[in-house]
Length: 334
Image (cartoon, rainbow, N blue to C red; front, side, top):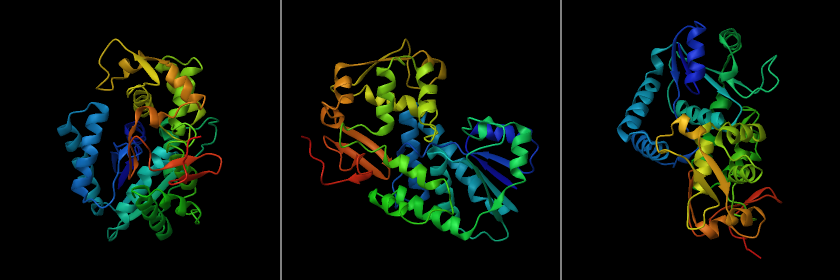
């Protein structure tokens, strides 16, 4: 039996729970950086390794090695009688889930059974955020409740990944008006993804605006800002590295919206360094929050959202909050 967990924390707890089989911690962050369609597995791995190295300060060779070993473990799935996917309801997890469902949808299972554990709550935990909150006994109880993945789930997962990795994000909008009940948490998660596109109002994605608002409201230190972000928007499921990258991007460009203060090198995403980082909103940041300036017009954009690469001094796609839709051609600043 092979268990695939969304990260090391849950994998470690599952090992302590003495669940049968091997445990693979899925070490990726497909919610950030390029996930372009049409690439071979090897080319996709190289694109992701390059992004992870640049974004998180990890040696490129180490990234490639990690991803290669991960893919090799996945490729050998037919050696197991059962593969169990452990994921949650948030965007971070749902993107990984649809990636894996798309991957498995292209393979012959033989005698291998594919099962799923995917939850958004747990008895006795009022503020459920994810599987990492559970202890060995609680994880073991979920294992007994696993369900075989259906053809409908495989098909929907594959279709969702193809939409997510497409260079045309309107494919996600088209998917969201269809029946997605086979994966009950998918619709709300992908809607959160669409909200990350630059707004027609100020050029900020919803996650970027939240970061800027928290700093403006006095959450200057990362050690306070990160949990505040998760409390305000738990459905993203971002870790500290993803939130920091968002903040860091707000400090880039000719007219930074934030200033960043730290006494060390942040390139390697050291958790201790992150906690000692503080932020201050600039006058340009205040103007953007007030709707008087546009972030993209001020600083340009170079951002991957799934398979969409937004770049230049105008975003090809904008999010219209009033109409809850993407807008490609009608954006006009008054």
